[in-house]
Each structure stands twice: as C-alpha cells, then as structure tokens.
Length: 157
Image 1: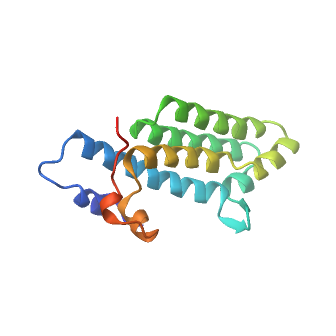
Image 2 (image 1 turned 90 degrees about the vertical axis):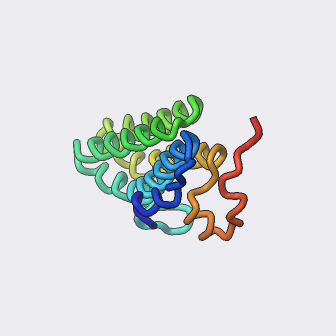
C-alpha cells in the first residue's frame, strides 16, 4: 500500500475542488478500514475463518475491551471523515457494540468475541459505502484489474 502523501499527489490537481478533497478523505478511510479489519479479525485466516488481535486480546481482561473500543472508535472516526451515510454509521455502530459488549462477559463473552468479526463487518460496511460513492482507491482498483477510466465514476443523482 502507498502512504497518504504519495496518494495526495494523485489528487494534486490545481483545479481540484471539494469533491476531490472528499474523495481523498474517503479513500484514506477505505485504506484505514482495510488495515483495521486485517489486524482485528484476519491476521491468521483459515478459509472463511480468521482471528486477529481482537480475538487474541479478548482473553486478557480489560485489554481486549480497550483494543476493541479503540479500533472501533478509529473506524467510526474514519467513517465520519468519509461522510458515510447515516445507515452505514448505524450498521457499523451495531456491529461494534455487539463485538465490544460480548467482551464484558467473562469466558463465554471472550469466546464469542474471538469468533465474532465485528471490526471486519464494520470495516466492510464502510468500504462498501465508500466504493458506492467514490469508487475504489486507485491502487486497489488497479490491483483488482479494473479500468482506470471507471474508477471514480459516481452514481447519477
């Protein structure tokens, strides 16, 4: 992945307006969501199942909850920066609440938290919202083999 500074140069059009700035923020949020979902729920993946820091740290009282709240808060911060729709924010909040509330119950809650990919689901909801409104970040679209001219096509209003 590339850093924000090099991505900013992709948008360094002197004629760029607020839509380009918003697209840049949205794509930065998309990349942050990708990192959080990988760290939280997919560090080790076996088929459709995976475990990450959220699942491992859930077994350490207090630490798992602190990580879950921090990662969830960061996801919501990026969602607000990307101007995600209210329905996306609501869905993300529900996933993260379910994930973090299970952490408060000793043993059984920790087991549920290990298996429930709340951060992954919230991150995917944010990414889907961003893709629908701004397209994929350029490097992701190129990696997936999409044509450049269709990258930033918006839906008609």
